[in-house]
Image (cartoon, rainbow, N blue to C red; front, side, top):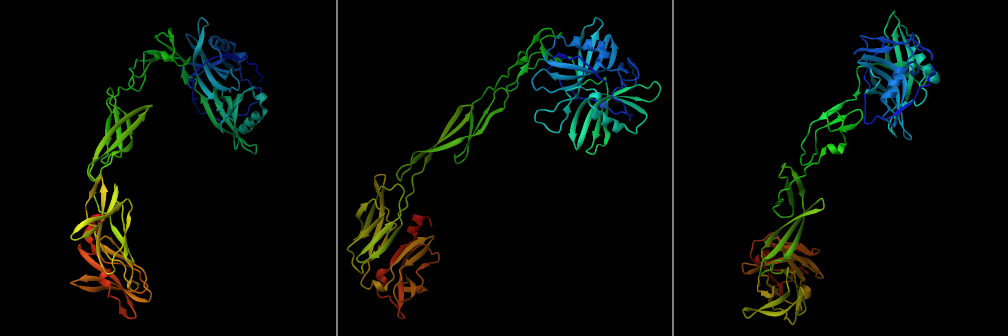
Length: 556
């Protein structure tokens, strides 16, 4: 059936639709030139509700010029979309006439893709026409999408699409009882084979049987076998989208949401009106009442206990919402440090930036005076000399070496170094020394770290040179190897006499005592050579340790 359909170009913006159909009975084969048994409309009472009459004869636009004229008249003020009538399917007698026809719809634009829609037109008794609504049957896939239908943008007749007609006839082969005539080829979908979508008319083979229009899908597999996969009856009374005006009541704006004035919106034309009769056209922007925006209250800051973190909350006075609810970036700054003589001051600055606006607050904390701990002293014996070394004290400006002479402490020397060599010492003599600190311009006269030292003597080669440290109330010994030493021993002066408290192999060069009670301990390391302990000069090489002073220094 060759058709030369008139193309009508019109604009119809902002419309969507859904195809709503039901099932149909099996059918028999048809030829490409079938047009129906007779021409004209046929009344349908059960299959088509709402008083619609379906076309029993030729559905081509050429055979239904009244419907095409109504379509042309309804679109005469609209531009931008081409409506090509494919088949006139039904009409309804009201105070005038309603028409339903299948149209190919395509925007007048480069690379535009077509769709097929059931278009509903109302023509009044004076010949004026307008859209009632529409229902989309088949849409083209979006750009780049896969798996959808390729919509037929050419001749929809089956004579121009013989491969589709052949598949349809294979699917109908052997079926009886219903006369099915394919009217238009709409598009195909590539699957594991091919789906073809057709507009068909079905009539039960029975006197005065009433025809039905439906959309059929023919599935053709890769071997050329074909079958009807879906049949959906067209329900002319179920229009997906009507051409109507929707009333929108006035809505007050909130802090974050726009409100609107009272207005009416035409779903078919996509236009807005300020009056119920839809005469005073306005824009969408005219309908809006802008959001009020938040009325910010005073900032509320919450700090962590240690002031290393802060949180900002700002609420709206109008709606109570938390407009700002954010953690701050906290930067500490030592405004001036504490010393052993005065307190210090630490500042914390919290910053939150929202929409290029900075919210800033701060806290200040008074820092306690520093707690003084005397430097821990270690020493190394030499010939007629002893090298003192000590730990640094935070904030120290100078260190002084003091000696206990004639029952009182006297400054021997001072400087910035953390070591000092006592020279011109007599062998066999003991010297009590301490290290004090100058901070804040004043000497802190704390002699609790005092130690007693002796230089090496002529028999020093038989005695281990040793160093000690106190850790956690334990005395840690470290000594140099003595040639020929068979064993080493740790000796303590207890109960007014020297006692060996630990013997070690000749390979040992370190020893850590058990944890000791607070008190003063005089100790020495001796060696066993040729089966005898060398102890003659041990008392002069002994070191006295005051654990209490070490506890004050190290917190052990």
